[in-house]
Amino acid sequence: MIVKLNLGCGKDIREDCYNIDIRPLPKVMQADVCNLPFRDESVDEVLALDIYEHISYLKSQDLLNHWVSKLKSGGLLILQAPCLDKIIEYFLTATNPGMIETGIACLFGSQDYKENTHLTVCQTTLMQSYLKKAGIKGMIKMNFDGVNVIWRCIK
Image (cartoon, rainbow, N blue to C red):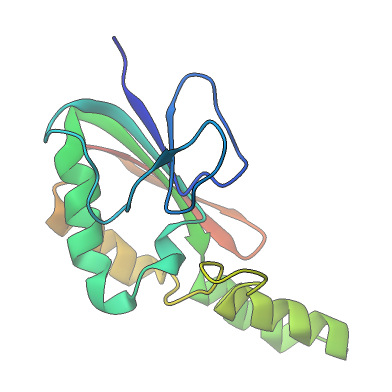
């Protein structure tokens, strides 16, 4: 059986995953992404779209260590988060207050509910270092989607 985790899923329910969020939501396992209730080396894929930035930057390495520890050898980590490099580029080209407010939301989150506050962002060089220290040994592929960076990593 293939085990996939969809961390911080919110309303993005995926049928082939354990959908996990800190909030009590329908069809979602309520759990803390910093303390996942799965054995080490028992997971095939960790999908972490727009969740990394909601955990304190002081816990960045510990968080990645935890997620990678859950992966089997050869397991896949897909991580998407706001990219500081791209946010800086965005601010340098912002030409009106609306664009600036959008940039601020990228940095600090929409803040439309308690957990929707950003406590960190990715910086490409630092994130690559964190991922290697966490045990990512295979290909690390990075793509950009607007101000977000998307990492595809093999343990």
